[in-house]
Image (cartoon, rainbow, N blue to C red; front, side):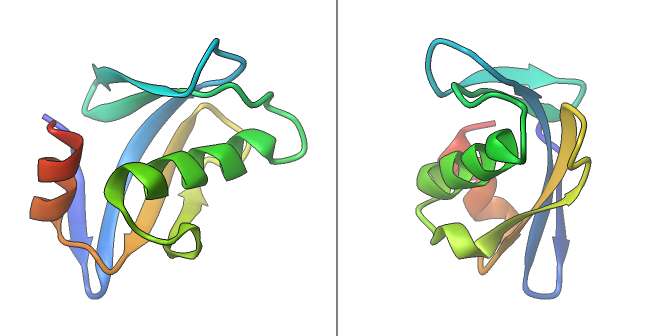
Length: 95
């Protein structure tokens, strides 16, 4: 099950990123984290930007509401999404 933690104005989720994939897609769960494949390379923050944009698109929120709060240089990241509830995230991501 996807680990989604609610805080005051949004939620945080764990994400495992695989850069330089053939296409952007959700590849399931890995130890409670959402596994995401991205076409972007892991240089100069490109994968972080692509990850935030992809998650924003999946959840139907503006890109400005999704931010990497932990793991900027690694594959394991924590994202904060403002303006959504844990139920909405689970429902939209179906995990």
